Image 1 (cartoon, helix red, strand yellow):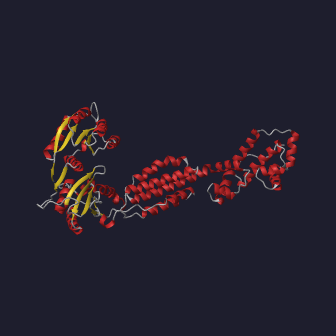
Image 2 (tube, one colour):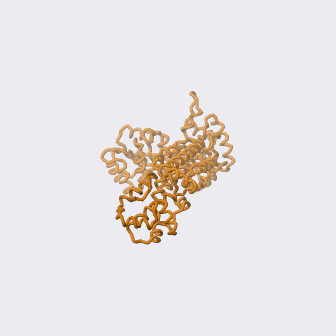
Image 3 (cartoon, helix red, strand yellow):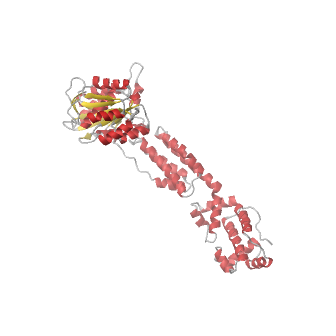
Length: 523
């Protein structure tokens, strides 16, 4: 590929001599579009150079003496914003990368991964972006005429996306298909329709740009290429974009394509994905609230079945694997959050949360994700059920101590605890050795004994105070539990000068709370 351009001026900022020499050689010996106007060894020298002469772009190291690359970027971004930068570094640290791009860096290239083709391609893209380099000849093989500029005669554009890591699956010991071979195959098949190529460094996806006058011309060329590469195409190493019209940002569309290599996650039957047939699909909506409600209602298994049905509906769809996994993770987070909001999230569930998320994130197929989700929600059901079985009765008894004066019924209690009232009744009886009404009456009678001994309230007032609307019924319950009528109990207490201190009451309450011990009135 040749270019007609003004010389694009470059400043190299690198403290390693051998690296500087290598960069100069790559740029000057393999391309006539660029001019190295200076070499410096650190950020301070670079700023001094910029005061005398401004390049179009810098190739800059990160770690340098006196002033490092990030410090230099900060200063250049403020004082010389027109100078663009490509970072060259031996550090694959996300914080370095994030900081570099914050200052408008065009690309971040790791030294161990440095290839002359990639460096030149990045420089040319940057040169075009700045208007210094202009494409002239995009010729293919066979001496075909140059394809017109994008936006001139070509009315339709396609992108071919290839993920290099999987191309070698079809290679033999004698023949190995590399990215270079693949590019030559595309050039040979499409000839003058081949326009350009670039790499999405973050995802390691190579993008080839094809321009056509008519879509049917593209189909014939595509058949030629896929016929040549059939032996090497496995597990959707290649994606064919839908057609794009003039004015579309091909780089932005390329990023969308790169995310769809996960299509293999949903359907591994095809050798490549042709989005002209399927289109790029949006992830279907999921009713997360229903899932959360089911778990809160002790129906975690049903919640898992809802998610399994949703995931099963994605078979064969061109949707993002990452988006699906993020949706499952979000649903899990919301499920646990809802349990916390309702004051029932067992510690075991919080402890298992990370392993649940790991299980989701590490699945390599849709079937694997379906199995993981089913297992996760089954375990959530087991954990919550066990937790309810071990501690729920304590929460119920505490509730009854706080609300004994209110019109508590089995149905209202079941509603407050979001439980089936029949199950609640049998559960409480099995753990406490008595029914809920019997326990509640014990709590009320104990409070009545305190009031009879220490207050001048009438029997009617005491009955109302402890939650009985009927004084007569209060008298029957009291005599059944103590052996005395309320009136007799009061007279005996005052006559004998019994001291009903809080400690006595606490002791009784403990007996009632544990469901053991005899319940009788001191004689």
